[in-house]
Every structure is written in structure tokens, then in C-alpha cells.
Image (cartoon, helix red, strand yellow):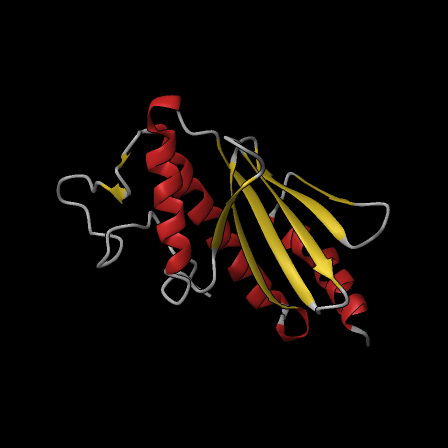
Length: 163
């Protein structure tokens, strides 16, 4: 079975397994929109040439007064790729929305691994949204709530992906 067929088979199974609200395949057949709940949708793309599955989720637009501090934080977060299992943060344009992304080898995935990746990706996406909404990010660091466990030694991550 080709990797493309493998990914298509996984995507046919993942919707019911995760009880997604909706899963929509693109006309090209290499990307899907996964609607997890009313507030969370993620894009899943399959890059056949690189044999990679890529997940992307929109974190949102930081408030004007904290935008550059948030941008600084996501740049620092990208530098910690070993601690975040390769999660990346990006902007969709100048002063644009923040996106979180993760990619993995398609042929290595089984249904259990894909389920874990999607669940953990969504949790991380929600953590970043919450951090931005609550404006916990100031000057490139995340402030933890009293009594909460620091997210990392560098204190920069609302969450890292656990595969």
C-alpha cells in the first residue's frame, strides 16, 4: 500500500474514532479540515513528495498592545524545537494571525499514533489560545498561575506536543 493510500485509510478511521464534528476532504485529496468542536478546527495536509503529514491550527490574532511580545515568544518557542517535538509557530502575514504547526512521517503513523498526535495537538493549540486570550505573555515569557506547574524550564511554552 502506498503512503497516500495509508493516509487516506487513516483519515477514514480517525473521524469516528475522535468523534469529530466534521471532516472534509479537499478536492485534490491531499488535505482535510477536521472540525473538533465549535471552537477548534485543524488542517491536516499530506505532502506526498516528502511523505509528511502536516497539522496546522490557527491560534489567533494577538492584541495590538501585546502583539510584538507574543511574536517574540513564538520565535523563542520555535528555537526550542527539541523540547516541543518539532512544533512550529508562524504568522500568516504581516501583523497576521498566529498558527501552530506539526509534521511527522506519514508512513510511520498508525491509527493510535495519529489519534494521539491530533488530541495532543488540539490541547496545545487550546493552551496557546488561552495564553493569548488571557494576555499571560509579556516580554517573551509565559506567566504561570499561582500553584500551577511551570510548563518548561525556560517558561516559554503553554504546551509541547507529546507523541
